[in-house]
Image (cartoon, rainbow, N blue to C red):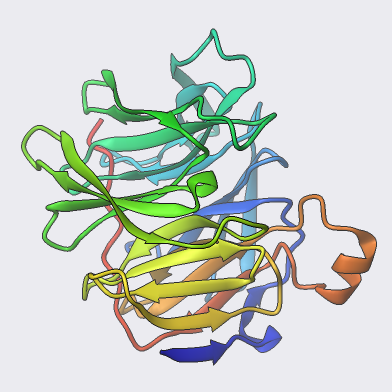
Length: 296
């Protein structure tokens, strides 16, 4: 197992995001899209100029994905929504879980066929099994796929599109499912990797072109690369305790972009880790997969 120490010099944007999440690389624009959940912002970062444009949302915004016709699909607290940064127009989509007032959306991603997946969590008790995982098709019809979820988080697919990886943060595990590309159905849920229950939990996730899984471990300040069998291949150690989300970007998709958080950190902790809330960019010598666009 290799251990790589990430330095402050690999911070590409010094920022104070409360909860930086859902980074996604736009290959045509050569820009990184990401959100700050509790500050209710969608960000667009241009690494060529180091400019970061920000767009205000009316509520917390928990994840985003590109739409095939342009613009974004996003999840707000209780709703799917559609946002076009060019016009500033936000269109509300379907709302979910009205009977669970403490539940909200969290992370999400588009599958290889262009369906959008997003899950929920209890925002008052993060360890409550009240969350669920949903799939939205191109017709905007939403179908529940997994119940009794404890803090829905990072999701991605193997390069052949036959395996889906899905994080439940407070089950302290990433699960693998058999994935049917035609129907979008999942089956044969099984543990892929896990970490000991405690102050560290798995968060964001992405899969590279070799089929290895990169998982953010919040509280430990690291991103762990697992081989397809679930064995640790390397760890990236960050100069912040909360490395939250990850994705591949850059001209050849060999740069790992990582979002970080500073929510609930004390003044002492922030003084010790002043890069918390910033973006990092690390050349990892491995290529990622292009971001997929929602077909709806």
